[in-house]
Length: 296
Image 1 (cartoon, rainbow, N blue to C red):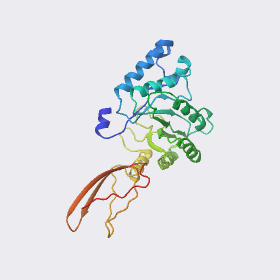
Image 2: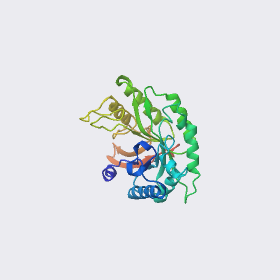
Image 3: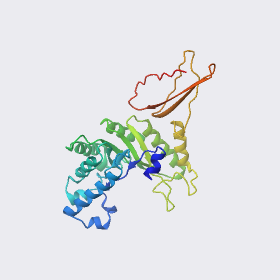
Image 4: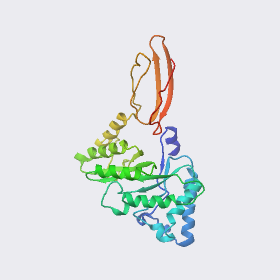
């Protein structure tokens, strides 16, 4: 799978190294205690992280660590710190994410509020490891019914003040069919518009037994209304090989409004019948990008 995605230039997130929810632990894991559990966790980290070292955009390290505490209950309050430290030691250049639900979705969930999220994040930042651990903010974004967009924006502002990259990692919306696509679009637009959100992933892959809360396609991979939303926004935001065309002014300048991403520029001079090409990447660092000069 990783080889296929790399061939097609698709970024990959590592989800997840371990999960803190006791409900999803294998029976042989729940039977372990003390050094046996510590060694099993260490083997897991060393095995999966070393296998994909340097190939992923990020890792979700200890998933849902605010709501659940299986490994802390078994191994002590520093369990998650140890896993972050071990993962970083094996793959020091890849961003290590917290990943949690309800931080954006449910204002009433104090367990994973933006303030509680920041508290845990600061604890992770205090880990003394060789080189600073590159951390990221993962927000699952499983919305129920009507998304509270003003609260979502406020939470993103609060977390974005850290300067760390934010990803919406598992976006879906549980809502009646007649409004689901509309609510889904609201969430994606709000995420895309925020300057600190650097990526979004939907939790909507087709499953013959039923998607978790939302599918993008039916069983024949024909778009549902939610899939139409994704395609529409990708085109609007410059994906799906979208093209911007135009003519330069009398001085040879052409201006365009562009989203972050990779671009191929093709120029043709109608009088001299000459052409030129140029490739460039537009990132958040290019707040005031300089003009690209290409001679034809």
